[in-house]
Image 1: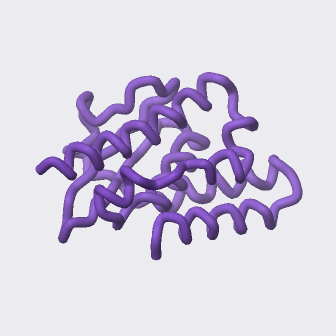
Image 2: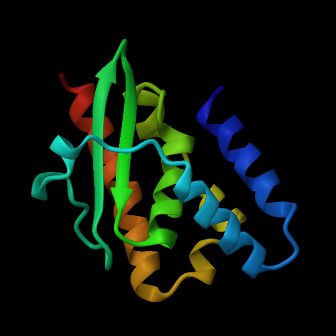
Length: 138
């Protein structure tokens, strides 16, 4: 599946919910299903700067596809990073670099987050793209 197809799938899923209470519950559920990051990667260098909560993000290149794992100490933030990992993991560095991120606005996520969480969301996206740039030059 392409990044765009996955993002459209996420948009459709969020459209099924009537209000933001249900959407927040869904985000929390997504966080609970996040593949667990290995303890060895929960280091200072893998913490995303600019997030109010602690968010660890690790990427590895397997067969020219970036595989992301993450964790957070906050349940909403864990759900947000789970959405981003779903959208961008198992894709090539080039596809990630060139991918649009407007699906975040289309699901209404950015406008329903506090300013600090919205900044954290932007930092998460930026870090995913930075990993892709780093792997594209290797």
